[in-house]
Structure formats: C-alpha cells, structure tokens
Length: 378
Image 1 (cartoon, helix red, strand yellow):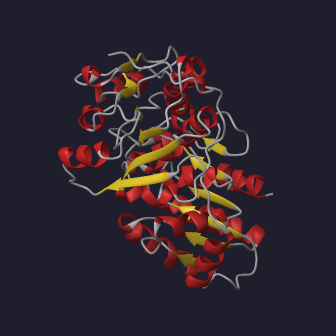
Image 2 (cartoon, rainbow, N blue to C red):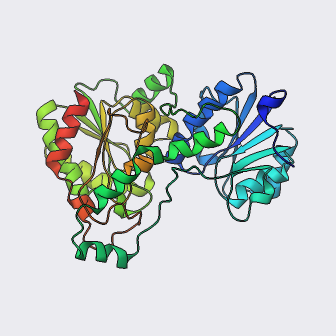
Image 3 (cartoon, rainbow, N blue to C red):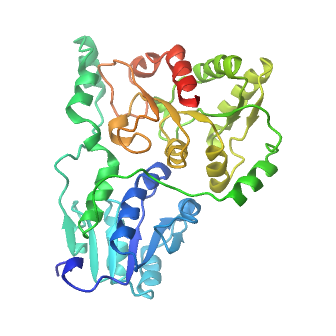
C-alpha cells in the first residue's frame, strides 16, 4: 500500500506526529512541525511524545493536541490508544523500529518515515536518506590515536569544510515533512513561553528583585563527559565576565548535575559573586522560562542549549566530541550564537568519553569563551 500523495486528493484531517525521545532532538524537530502546519493549516495535528518532553510542546503553534506515554508503556497499549483516535496519516520522526510499529498497530492508513532496517514493511512510504545526510560515526580509539600520531592537525577542520551546515539534523526532519508536500527551507527552531509563566517562575525562585544583567551557566551534558568543557573553566569564565559586567549568574542543570553545580556555586559565592543555583530544582517549563530571561547562556552541547536558542537567548558553546554543523543550536549557520571548537585532529569523534587527552575541549581557552560571552551579551 503506497502512501497517498497529499496533493492528489483531500488533505488529511487528522495527523499524528510521532515525536523524538530527547530534549535537544525535539527542539530540532520544531522547524519541520511548523512547516507541516503551513502545509496543512486546517488539519488537527497531534504529537505523540515521551512523558518527560510533553511540557516542551505546551502553547506550541504546530500542535493541537499532545499525547504522552510513560517510560515502559507497552506497544499494544500505545497502539490501541491511537487506534481509537482515527488518524488519517502518521509522520514518524524517530528512526527506530518501535516507533514505526506503534503507528502500524494503530492502523493509521498512511505511515511515513525514513527507510531503516527492520521497519520498512511497517511504513506505507519509506523515505530514502537525503544526499547531504551525514552519519555521526563514532571514531575508534585506534583511529583517534592514529590521527594524533600522524599530527593531522587539520583533520577536524577538513571534516567541517567538507560537510558544512547542509548536513544539520534540522534538514533531516524537514526532508520528512517535505515528503508530505511541506516546504523544506529551514526556519529557526521555536518553542513558546507566556508572560504569566515568566512572572510565576521569577517569583517562585526569588528572582524578581535581581539587579544587573542575568547570565546563565549550564555545565552539564547528559550524553557524557566528552561533551563537557571543564567545570573549573566554567567558573573562571563566570568570574571574569562578572568583573566586567556586574551580572548575576543562574546555574542550570538536572538532578545529575547537582554535585558539579553545588561546587560551582560555592566557588562563585566565595568570590562574592551573585549566583543562584537552580540545578535539579526546575520543571521543564520553569527551565524554559528562566533560560528565556538570560542575556546569554554559557552551555555545553545539550538539551538546554537548544531550548535557550529556540527561545531567542544567545548561547556560547564549547564543542568537542560533537559537531555544530550537525547539532548546533538555532538556525544552521546563524551568527547570533558563538560555537567554539579547537583544532583537534580527532574532533568530532562522537564518543561519550575521551580515550586520550581531551584536547578538543582543553584547546578552548577561557579567554575565547569570555570574549564570546561579552560579544553575545552586548
């Protein structure tokens, strides 16, 4: 059964979008969803999302309804729930067999997603990969050591020059939406907070009487230590910037970042620097609101990085094991953010932990970061 070409007949009335599973990835899908809304302005668009991400979509103009599922939810439970809602078409954004099986079990007539092993027969239209698509292949330790031993200092620069921002993940999701007739031209990711939420969060966390500009620090990264610029450098950059701007710092992070955030708070308070440690204390909506209120955010490559950029907050990001060309914040190639890399032969390696000397992050100096923060906040 082939998927119906939406331009060949009546537009679908009820569309299900199976959302992705990680915060940063979810933000990068918003351009495709906005383009889908443009293409089908009268359709009822429902987003199926993991429970932990449901609040990201509150007030979003691309979605009429949110259906969330808890960790461990069964396939048949999800499929049965969706089947009763009588969708005409499903757009499957993740590449997993499970996500395709969910919409197949829901008996949705048209099911569109990327062609991948073990799932193509579950889709009515399996979309081939884009010509510019780049796999985030993890380098082996042997390969990394060979690059370093060969002193191929330009290897990282050559990788970037040969790929560029046309390989960005945003284009992957736009390409899927284009299979339904949507415009594939990139637009900036977008999420939404309300003035009422801003007032409530500032009051809850005692920020309504702050004086001076508010800057943010996000020293964690869920993927692993290879994505984290050294915590001591975060604190030193914060010290130098505060001396020049008289700013107030907010420290962000999840429950797993509390230890590093507590140490950073103690160090900054010892230097008489105004700081509020919010790591592990905010809901997702509160995190969004508070990121929106920052003049600039110093962050690792992470979900909060994408959220801040999508809310219009400039970000300064040291990139090491990952590549801004593939997963950078905001509109690919946007000059409003400062995405910093070192000339490491082995970067990007896409590993969770560095098998050598962490030269990709150690090669990004505090001076460079401070300069970027001052420029971004201007």
